[in-house]
Length: 494
Image 1 (cartoon, one colour):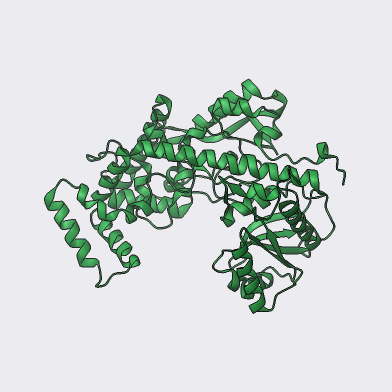
Image 2 (cartoon, rainbow, N blue to C red; image 1 turned 180 degrees about the vertical axis):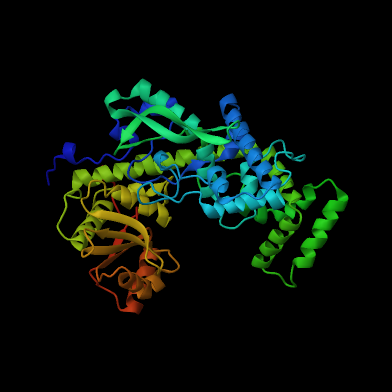
């Protein structure tokens, strides 16, 4: 098959769209983001605190200064709705193309629930915020260690908002040095810095890369991490048994241990231990400072682990997944559009299957010789390969019955669903038996495709067993993709 690959090569990365050498981005220290879908990376505020760069330490100090301002307001008097919105609520900064939205770059903002939780934490639990005696510094993450529903995405969004002026100036400096001025535009951006005299947020003007009538923000790689912030609730609860041992005050340590035992039921399970730990932390909030001190003392590990995660993400998302999209463009008609959403989705699935199984494409689903067994990452890879389609492509669509992986549509009357699953998914049989039918009903369509990817012969046998039990063998809209590497010759030898 001959294709005009020059015209069909998909533009996915920042460097593709703005015709900039990847080496320039790397030298500048910026991550080469995708302008198709968010990459699941985010700024960890601890990396600002732990950095040896003065400008990063100043950013952290500035964040803590603003949080002290909020603390003073929270403990002095009740905050009305207007000021709660003005001081505690922030929009998501989607223009950095980082975070947790698989479809495009629109995620959730820091809305009313976050503002209320932050205000209550200051007013009731952390009234001494900014005056800690155990830790070397205050930390934003401390405020998110107790309340449910306040997680890494909230910390990331809050940090990005509080460092927005720096990120915009960082991007502007790169744009002026490396980008064609025709690809840039002047943007006036609200809420970039806080004026403590007027107690209000101010706007700023910047020359920035322009994409689809919006600006783009670059982020330094040495501020990014993946999966979890260094200071996080899971670690706090998981490491709870070690925290009392770090308390030098004998009386406090005895009280903590006694209270923990009193709320722990007989013959406790893991869940009971976690619940008892949370209750104890709420009763003795000072325990959080001892946990954070332990994290501060091991800060070099945070930097090292984050560097490894970012390097791994560059290999997987920037190098492998974008190379996979380009392989599709070269080897197939993947980026030419049929007329029906089901045909479109099925044809693209078949192209995926063909390239993975027959054109060495399986290699892009391995990192360090290990298969990518994360459905979230597979969805990102699939999303990147839809670049240029005239169909609407939406992921994690939730119509009240739970999220479906992908909905492909053109108008309200033509829509099809695609579920992408690992053969190792423990809920695979249930999904095939019931869930997709529920999704079809919720989305008012009878057209759906189930894609199952496997990496070993044992995984294949498992899937075949499930399909046999359910009477689904040989069904057209259930597509198995063989991503094994032990049964394929290298493309260079084939």
